[in-house]
Length: 246
Image (cartoon, rainbow, N blue to C red; front, side, top):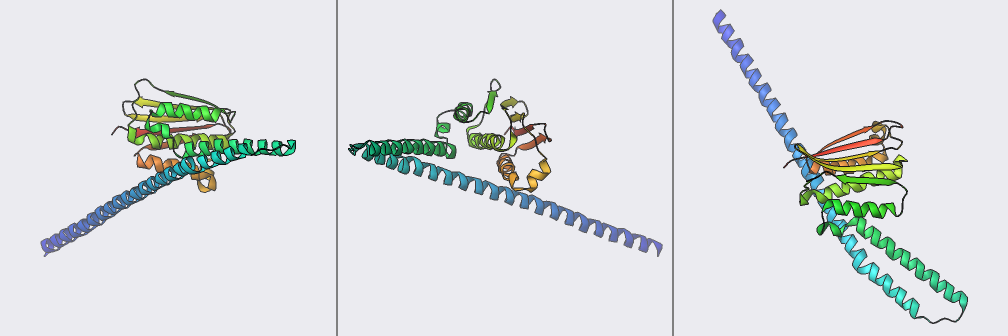
């Protein structure tokens, strides 16, 4: 009788253990599937966003730009004798020139066409040069020797750099920003560091200011990259992104 009870307890325990293991495995599988679905959703959103950016950039470049240039030509063909009218035409012409310049800048930010012809380092240097002409922020950029950046991830790293520069200009109050792309044996690193005001990371994540960080996180998720922020009030901000070797 005792043996029968013992075996019954053992069998019951085994059945319970099997049920628990099955439940745990099911939860793990579900979480993995859910995470993959989330990743696929984020990737689809980013790709749609890039396609929309490309469409808008092309519209600005191919439609609005030539149209404004044509308007300017028509304005210069108008013959006026009154000095006041001539001054008004000249002012309008200068406004059109400024608008065309801004359209080109917007088009470039939406779609850096030079990325198709040049490597990421050259495009980032060009982008920094454009920023330097309009903002006092001093940006230093360097890449380590023999750095190889796969073409398929260049656009994502460029968007991350854009977001970092934008956030630094808008929020940090920094005078200097350093950007480094470094090739290491265990992966490709993108590191940024500024000497700005720093911030409380939890407060930023919970507020509207966290949208820029979310954009970077989404890009990192696409690349299976790790994303680390080191910051504190009045201590600047350091960002370390590691893209693992494929």
